[in-house]
Length: 186
Image 1 (cartoon, helix red, strand yellow):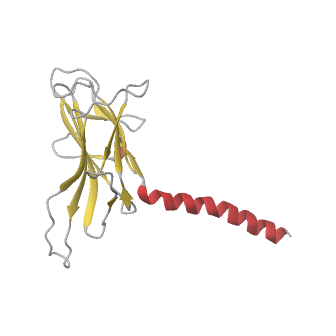
Image 2: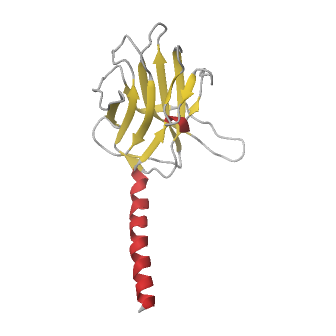
Image 3: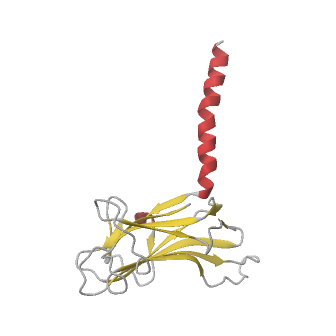
C-alpha cells in the first residue's frame, strides 16, 4: 500500500509541472533590467532600479535604446504588451517605442553566410496611442496585436533571431517620467 501511495503522489505532483512547462512556449515576459543598453546609449544615462524598471537618471534627456533577446523556446504569440510611464502627450513630450524585431541569419560553414538587416514585426508607439493610467504608480499598458490581424505569429528560430528593441525618448526641457517596467509577449 505504501508503494501505491508514493506512486500516486508522484504522478499528481508531476502532472501540474508538465502542464505549466507546456504552456510557457507561447508566453515570454522580460523586465527592462534584463535588457542591454545599445546604440548610442551610455551607461550613465539609464537607471535600472531594484524592481527591474529602466528609466532616465534625474535631469537626463535624449534617447535610451534597450535590446532584449527572445529565447528560442518561444514558439507562437498573438499579442505584445508594454508597461510604461511617460507624460502622455502625443507628439510633443516623451515617447516609448517598443518593436518586436527579427534578423535572418545564414550559416554556411565557419565564415560564410550573409545576415540580413533587422526587420520589424510589430511596434507599439506611446505617441500613436495613449492608454489610460492603470495603476497607482502611474503605469500605462499598451497592448498590440503582433500581426495586422488577430492571427498568430509562429517563430522560426532555425532561420531568424528575434529580439525586442525599446527606445525611450525624453526631449530636453521635459521633466516627466519616462520608465519602462516590462514587455510581455503571449
